Image 1 (cartoon, rainbow, N blue to C red):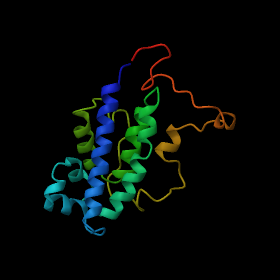
Image 2: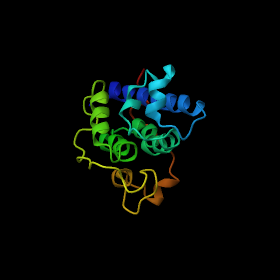
Image 3: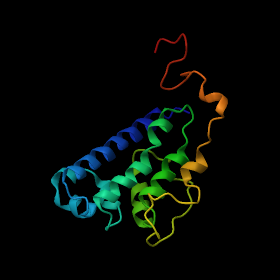
Length: 173
């Protein structure tokens, strides 16, 4: 399957998320809700996904949740086989936990560019979580479930770059 355009859109979105986080961090207001700053600051208007976050999520909480929700994306976007469930489930679990309406709006926003984003995931529960999503939980997170650990014998093996985005040996592209 040729999913290079989906990968590109997801990478661009990751850049937007990091840019929004940078803009929010520069405000120097870690305890102010993101939604409030997004409504007030012109520089944040272009980041529509900020309006989908829980209304009480602060800048500091957003930063922690973004790190947890998107840390897997660079590695996953370079894998030969795209793990669609892992890409969406980390965002659902870590950024939208307890906010099913925000998650639905975010999925609709993302599906304008990447049709399959967020499909096939379990329904979210309403209500605020007992603890922040970025706090380590005793249960396995969606990332732990979807990512298999490499056997120790492969840790020291040389990295072979095959397939996308690295050209096949002998190709001219």
